[in-house]
Structures are given as C-alpha cells and as structure tokens.
Length: 389
Image 1: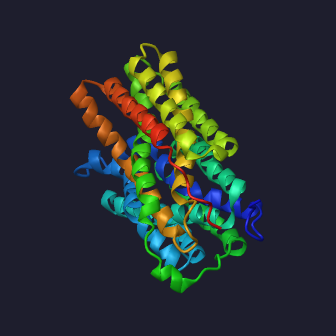
Image 2: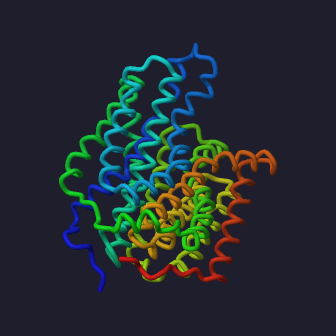
C-alpha cells in the first residue's frame, strides 16, 4: 500500500497547507478595504479601475506565470523557489504600508502575484512529491478545505484590521516570511535526475484535457464566490451582515465538499466529476429560479458542495500520473488554468448577464453548461493514470 515518502510526516503537510493559503490571503484580505482605498486615492485618475485591480491582478499573474514556475521547479528545484517566493511575497505584500502612489501599489501587487504563482505551484507539487496513495488524496482535499476556511477567516480579519486604517491589513503579509523559517528546516528537495528533468517533455497528453476542463471548472467554482452578494442584493437583502452570513454558509459548503474528497477519492474522476459538476449544475439552476433568499442560499450550498469536491478531483486527475521530473510543470499548467478561470469568471458572467438579461439568467446558463460537463464526464469516464511515486 502506498504511503508517504520516507520522512514525510504531518509537519511538512501542515507547512505546505499553510503556504497554500497565501494566495487566498492575497485574494480576500483586501476586499473590505477597497472602498477606503478609493477614498484615500480619490484624486488619482482612473481610481475606480485601479483600486479593484489591486485585488485582482495577483490572480492574473498566477494564471500567466504558474506554468513558468513549474518549469523552474522541475529544472532548478522546489525548495529554493518556494523559500524565495515566500520571502518575496512578504516583501511585495507589505510595500503598500509605505507607498503613497496608487500606481506603485498596483505594481507591488504584480510582485505579489508573481510570488503567489510560485508558492501555489510548488506547495501543490511538493504535496504530490512527499505523499502517495490515500495520504496524497487526503492532503490535496485538505488544500481546498483549508483554503476555503482561511478565506472566511481572512475576510473577517481584513474587515477588522481595515477599520483601523486601510494600510493596516497589509501587515499580515509578513506571515509568509515567518512560515518560511520552519519551511527551511523541515522541507527537503526531492531527489531527482536533473538531467532527465531538463530533457523530459511537457506532459501535454496527460495534462491538456484535465487543464481545459479545469479552466471551465474555475469559472464555475468562482461564480457564486463573486456573484452571491449580488444575487442576495437583487432579492432585496440590504443588511451587509446577512450578505456576509450567506457567503459564509456557502464557504462552509465548499469546505464540506472538499472534506468529502478524502473519503470518496477512491472512486476516481470517472464517478466524481459527474457528481461534482452535477451538483454545481443543480445548485446554479436553483439560484436561477430562486425568488426568495432561503431558496437562493439552498442553491448556493448545493453548488458550493459540488465545487468543493470538484477542485481536488480535477487536480488528482491532472497530476497523479506525472513523473517526478514532470510534476512541477504539470502542476503549474493546471494551476494556471484554474486561475485563468478565476480571472475570467466575472467577465464571462457579466457579458452573459448583459446578453441574456440579468445575472440569474447568466448563472442558469452556466448551470446548463455544468450539466453538459457532468453528462460528458459520465459518458467519457475519465481515468486518472496510475499514481507516480
């Protein structure tokens, strides 16, 4: 029976899961302070565009650069790249504490995104390097679970710190440099043939279809994360606390879906993808027809449970059969595909809402496409390759 690599206990997994939360920190920590930043830079031309970019540009950098981070991870090394990225994340992340120009803050956020591309790619790659079999599935599922719970906590923390001033939340970016200290002592570089790594081709045959499906899965995954507050507002909710509670309920459903992967991973993508896409489809259609807040939240819970199961299923389908020398690039390509989906999700739904006559119709259309994906997965029965050691 496959177990963890020699010496890979729980502590490396804990550190890698903590590192995986850094992109989540960058994504949600600043959301509560965007209005305050807009007021602080009210005299800056294009402030209405630049302030939201502060939040979204790191995701774009991950989408564009994660595959290149994978190349470096395979050919140069995982551990050094991760440690450098964690320190760079803290450096760029805390720059807005001292910067007085909005454009320079946006530039610092580009640096954060570059660091996040390396952090996310390497943390996921090392989990698949250090662990095999059921333990690998466990920690990949926990990666989504921990990130989801962290997002809820960071959103609340960002709001609390932001009340003390819009710059204050940026101090939390120092966490990455602190986590890098035990990483330097606990993590190790997997032994691999560097010459073989340099000559091993990009595993397109194994990674292309899962990554394409992941791009669509990313659109589905982030749809209600971004749009649920607007759905509730359209149903007459004006209390920010109620909107926050609804978002938290959906986040907990995502966490539950991710947790379920630990117990269902043995069924593989052939069974799990139809279930995950099917739940997302049902939930989105419920939201489409919802005429009350409880029904909309029920749809959001169903969708989120499906997407929580979806991400670890897609990841294990994509990378489980890759050799050690290919794993960084394969993980980088998959990660880039997911974040492209995240970045374009609000754009696609915005255009669709304008075309079809409203956000509920756009979410319904996405639900129909998710149902098509569920049927396609049930027919094609995608199989993951034998787990590479």
